[in-house]
Image (cartoon, rainbow, N blue to C red):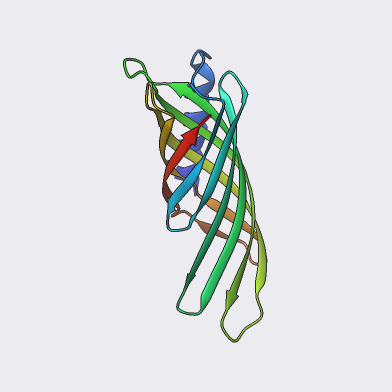
Length: 157
């Protein structure tokens, strides 16, 4: 846990030390996010280098069903020499439900982080992202889930 905290602090310090240029080259994007949870993703620009992302995830297999809504504040930074490519970091929260066949369902709340890469194709309304969203689940039991890596494919407008 101390290593994770140190890495996150170093990343935040590096990000704050970078110049704030116009990072993302689109205002809104809507599409899918595919990973351990599949779902719908919507991004909207808040200012010149920040976006809000809303993700609706769902998964069902072997008698277990998950539904989760996540909201993330993301700060974008351009990668020099690679037009359209940005790296981003941020945080947010999630609320979800899990139901196991034959048992009552649980509702859970979580605090999320996000770290990823974002690419907007020049001349085409397509955006791709690859990100990692670790979660500290707060209720009903406190635990850490560090394994949500996803690929986003979106239409920009």
